[in-house]
Image (tube, rainbow, N blue to C red; front, side, top):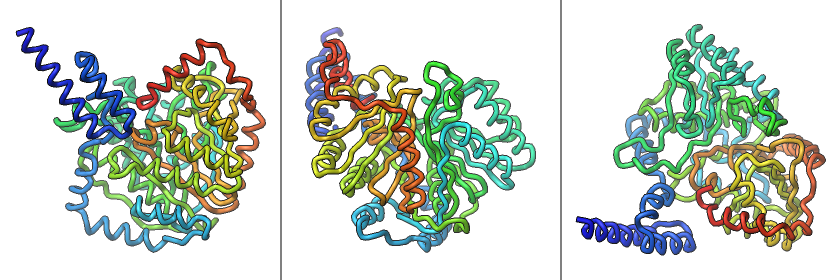
Length: 470
């Protein structure tokens, strides 16, 4: 029996290695997995089938089924949205073409997008929108805390539910794994429809535990939306001393882009519940501003790696400056190459990262990129006052982005994410002023820091080996 078991494991290792050769995204990853699977099958087989998968099964098929059942409604909604599509300036034509291929709705006019800087401004605006709701609230978060901030939102949602407002709350099963039963029960008793986004849904998807839904979206009555870096938890208000003050950025959105964000939420809700919600699809162009914006929902269920494709193409359009703020820097080779090429052709490339770690391996992985990036002319800045968690990109005076995407392989390939890109000059200038203020709180990483202690350089290289799953 033991011999048969050993034989089966070895055969399983070879079969899994063949699967890795055929399916793993990068050649280096395929080589690493296949060698490990053949050499150490007892350990590597379970690791591979948990962490080696890069395609989320079942999601796209579920949405196609929903479209088949409700195609008239979907076509009507998208037809109204497409009436708001607007062309971009010539400089951004390549980006516009890619957006049109990757997303059903590319850049639209009639939007009003406002920056919300840090937790107080963001949560105040979100709670005010919730209080003003008259029909429905759609709330999606990666982390929902049973703490001061989380309970403030809980009370606001219960109050609106008791007034007859329909509330649908969706959270990620990994990011919010510690939510108390009492918290859930109080919301559900008040009438809030509360669901978990589980990547393992379906009997053939039991091993899909390496995927996350990292989106943070709030929709109120189909008229106003919020998206950005902030989850609903105490640390985002700076209530956790080790990482405070917390630095983050969110957006308040009106106009056609609200419906695009709403469509993203409804797809995730359908995966979790197989329910199609009755929502408002009327496009309400903003009377305050006429900004051009684009919503890019991405995830591991995409036919192509839409997230990395769009961000790399955006970087390639930079001619003067490329400023990026992210809590993590664990990108893949194509992203690194795009950054280096931008710096070599004279673009002012600045990467803002936190000086304090919240995840050990992710923090130290960034050190392994310093030398090669600085040789090309890329400048790294470390934000010193607290933890920098915002996900912001500024390209020339042409386009700015705020969303949920970190500069890591997880966001590019394994997470469901949502980003907004805005081309209107007033918004771009607001992002510029925000990042200039952040840069004043940063220290420039000098090239002399390449001569770090041996333990740090070794730790950084080990962390880089783990980059596909960080």
